[in-house]
Amino acid sequence: MMDVTAVLNTLLHGNQLKRTPRTGWVQRGVPNAENVAAHSFGVVFAAMVLAQVVEEELDLGRLLAIAALHDLPEALTTDIPTPAWRYLPPGIKTAVE
Image (cartoon, rainbow, N blue to C red; front, top):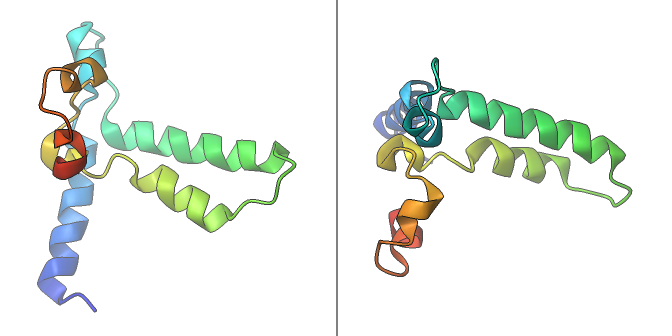
């Protein structure tokens, strides 16, 4: 079990996503750029809706957890756009996340 400090640090890191703008939006000069938390909500919402129409049996809890947490590392790394990863050493993205 995590200690209280670790729990609070985890919550604070996750909360940082509300203040982390999506880099692609900023680079393109989009006013009021979406933040990573808003993007993650959109992914969770899409996963919920699409899970209702998929004919296969899904582990909805796992699906929603993955959707909700897929960008959590960006609380520490910021939103590094996909093209930028091409210029970094192989395996660095996995190591950072």
